[in-house]
Amino acid sequence: MIQTRAIDVESIRRDFPIFTRKVNGKPLVYLDSAATSQKPDGVIESMNDYYRRYNANPHRGVYAISEEATAAYESARQKVATFIQAPSPKEIVFTRNVTEAINLVRYSWGRANVRAGDRILLTEMEHHSNLVPWQLLAREVGAQLDFLYIDDDGLLRLEDLDRKLEGARLVAFTHQSNTLGTINPVKAITQAAHRAGALVLVDGAQAVPHMAVNVADLGIDFYGFSGHKMCGPTGIGVLWARRALLEAMPPFMGGGDMIKRVRLQEATWNDLPWKFEAGTPSVAEGIGLGAAVDYLCGIGMDRVRAHERTLVEYALEKLQDVPGIRLYGPADSEIHGGAVSFSLPNVHPHDLATLVDREGIAIRAGHHCTQPLMERLGVPATSRASFYIYNRPAEVDQLVEAIEKAQKVFN
Ligand SMILES: Cc1ncc(COP(=O)(O)O)c(C=O)c1O
Image (tube, rainbow, N blue to C red; front, side):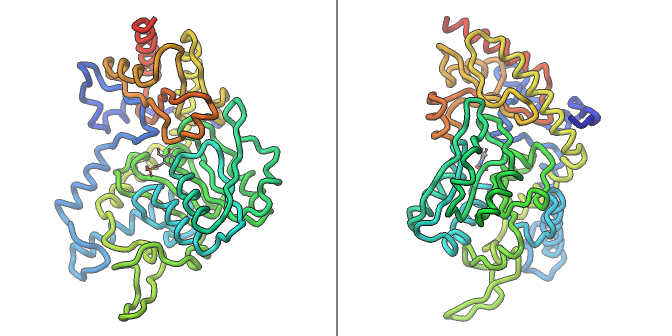
């Protein structure tokens, strides 16, 4: 593991106003960042500042505050491009979230390129956002879905990858599982997919907030993520795609901003990326995402990852001692990102989440939008603790104590 200077968690926590509040009389222990992260002052202030000082529709006005809004929004796009090492900001399409980014590819690229009999290769660990859109496309065009399955450690079984890639047009999979925490071997799968002539879409919702991502180096074709999981606001997400693909793809939604010239019977399309951004964009949210990128860059993504890795290692070690606990996902923190799922005999995950909430601890209980994975694991739901830059090792101890207390209620 690369040695990086540890992050100063206490100083980071002071940037997040939510940590001054109490929940059920206790300081908030927030262990649900895989669902959405908390927001630092800088992000909240950047959005306030837009609404207070230069609220205007970007791209349209020639007056000062509209130009300021355009500059701030487009500067956020440049920040995002640099953050994921995209060759150009023209390849950064702003969407509402990763769900919309994936659906954009489904509607635009998918309808134009996937034909009856083609295969779309997915995995058993996908979030519904990277499964249901492909079910819909497959049904619409007569394509077939196939899946990579997992082993008992929560790793993708890749031994029959080449066979499954025969006839595949697209391979779509998550960079990091939101339920198991598994970090998938993106490069290896991508190289095999490209050898077989398939394109690759990666769902980066759980990766971009937590590790340094370089889309050019990964060699993939499409990459999506959501702002709200990386210290940014809700309502803004990103689709990155290789420029040649975006140039060739038809528009997604029609309307203002995405056109160059409109006549009664026809229209021509705006340049990239605006061809894919119909209507007034989420301006404040885009600016907020730019501030979130600044914030994470100020910490350094290698340090973010190192911190989470320490927390996951500690959590896996401590949770193991809870009587009867079943832990899901890889035991090796090298390939286990900041989400830890577990279940207990005799305590339903929802009851557990309710009981630990009494101690001020927020964890997730449910299927985590991965119902097929739950079926594979043989459970209707799991409990999930997920970590971020503001979590302390002591919060793992608090969680374990609260779990043991909950067990006493049921035993
Ligand atoms: C791996 C993964 N993909 C997709 C999503 C969907 O994200 P959003 O609801 O922001 O579109 C999530 C959210 O939990 C996720 O964890």
